[in-house]
Image (tube, rainbow, N blue to C red; front, side, top):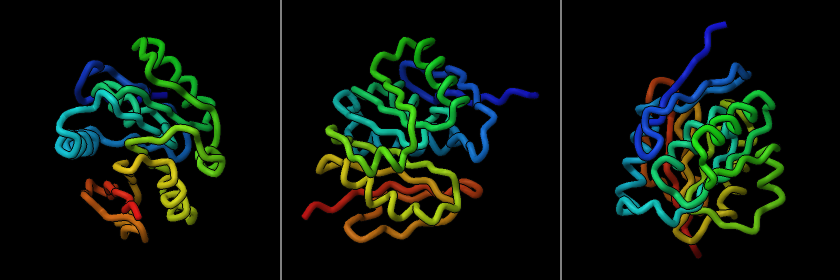
Length: 186
């Protein structure tokens, strides 16, 4: 079996190789898309990642969460249910000595349904494509945002901003449509 790797684009862990586990439905976010996302965030956050709290649901390879950690966010919580992916995530976290990264074994939808005591500045949603429950997931995730919080979402088609959200940015790379949403506070 040929191992696949991607690399962290920038920050403290720049050029670190991430092994991509062989798991059904796992599609690591391409380098170009991650770079675009973090350029958007740098602009919106005035390059200040230091106090940001990030929730990476469906962490998979960890590409998005470790990229955030590399850029200097205060804390990243990754949620993943696949045992192989979990092993790789924990191994990479330990190798990087990334104490600000916590990894939770479990189903992302269950985590959202239970809620969390913490609120997040950024929620990363990159679930398997083609899921009918995706719009509900987006709305549930909004309940865990800070007032200025953002949701990054990937899908196999363009997503219209749900009620209560505004789309700040949109991009497409091949079959991946990526979006940055802000929840409107009432």
